[in-house]
Length: 295
Image (tube, rainbow, N blue to C red; front, side, top):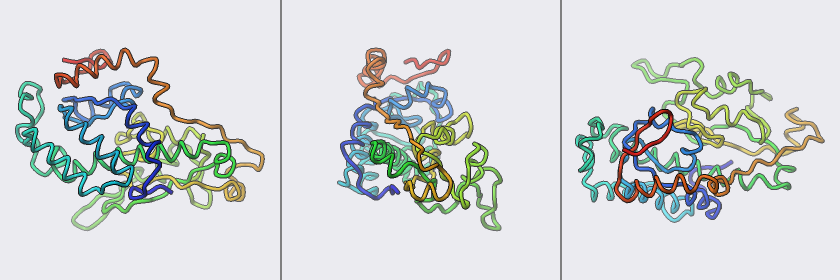
């Protein structure tokens, strides 16, 4: 099981961070989902974040978190220092953004780029994704697939209001269909003694993270599959998977390594021009006919 506080293979995580291009944008979270998945996988961005300097600070802090060189509180403070240096205010945004139609944010809310909740969400979500990307990469060797062929979806982090519940005056109440076991069942996942287990190469991992299936999904096939999710992976041994009936003794699980650098080669010329323009002049982006364009 991978937990947010555990140091991971820094080189593997750094490979993903280096592959991601900084994408300053004035788009909302909903509008960002309309971008092509391949582009979003290759970009480091956050809704309504128009400054490349801020995204670069996030990348540096995520890298330090991945290497175990800092903690979430220190990383948050450094991001907030950069926001101060850039003159950010939740009501007015950044200087120069007046014509970008970015709505005012309530101070301290999740839309406030400087709020603890917003900064933590960006740091944790990206950190968990690169951690689990590295975790998956390590588990794609022939030896690992032979010994540990399956993942189990389990809770790895506590949440005050778990997905599938809402807070009311009377306390926590269930929201049917939103919890992870319900999503697992909706995607035709099998339960084994009540546990959510599937082969590493099972398409259910991509289905759980698809925004076509769930509104809060992050369009990823590694945890976290949705915003602020407390669920992640635990590897399941071959012996345990056979005993539970997940696989047969002679089943072979296919390797599916993620290699963003290789995938980028065919598109690097087209993407890099746009991203470099954005970095140089902090231009905002817009969507036209399903394609990312710079204003």
